[in-house]
Length: 418
Image (cartoon, rainbow, N blue to C red; front, side, top):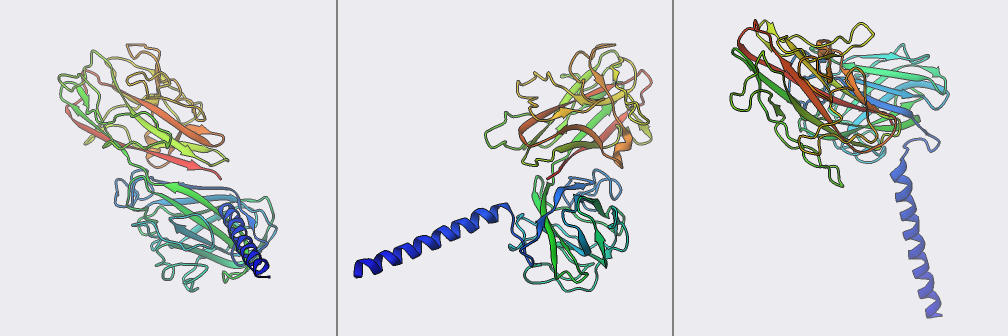
């Protein structure tokens, strides 16, 4: 009899362990709160205007170099037909809904005061909620909105939205209406999205999470005396099994290795690098954002055109003022500069390999309008294990290029779709 009781106790403990393990496995996929029938929001994506950390405020609000006053654009597809009266966006260091939400260091949505929504049945009536108390479980929000540091809440009179409807919600990007990124470079963070059938955030309809990250900027410095010089700083390291991120200071230089200057009689180039790893099965788009090289009111001319279509790219023209960039698929400076398996370069930025002598085979383009509207440079249609992109920069000057120190900052953005 004693042996039977002992066996039953062990069996009960084993059953409990298996139950807990099963719960953990399910939890790794998705945890729903408030409604056991909640569906998973599909085609989820967050595009931020700047991947700079939140302590950087280069340029105007909503531009590529301003992580302190950023614009957040959420895009997703509604999986369940029915009323939607409120939506909650929780910004956390972990993705799973229903678990404790810790705000990333330095992040705040306290200044997000308005929202613009699109999508049939979703495009009207929403405003940023300023009254509903959303502290404690399952919300984990701090304060009210405006004022919440880790949540953005919007609501309206409930109205029906049909399953399969693609919608967007845009926040911030203004001088007094903005979102501040986490204040750490290369900081991953997650946004948990929950829709509710009422406008009191009580009856859950659908849920899902998206990932994003801050990223170190590439800072380019150019000096023009009689010639132009880009200061070298960016270096490339071999990818590892864990897809180790780059850790250099982001400075880049081009020019004569002795004088550190450019000549109107010779073309010079240099490289920076980006590396991507993501499990976003809906694909990822890589953008660049920045202005051409400038010194006061003087500037180096951008190569090629990207607006209006068709897009074009041009070859190096020695003795002509030119600044441009392109993906270099044959970067052999270190042997590790380029390794695209899942990513594909986007025209007109796909032909940076080749010569840059006058009329060379390499082609470059640059869009100064990317300061306010980031421009796509590469994309992947599915997940990316570990891809490294080599961006080649071209700098040419003419005999009349004014002397001065020319500078710009180029920001690279990754927008995954889940």
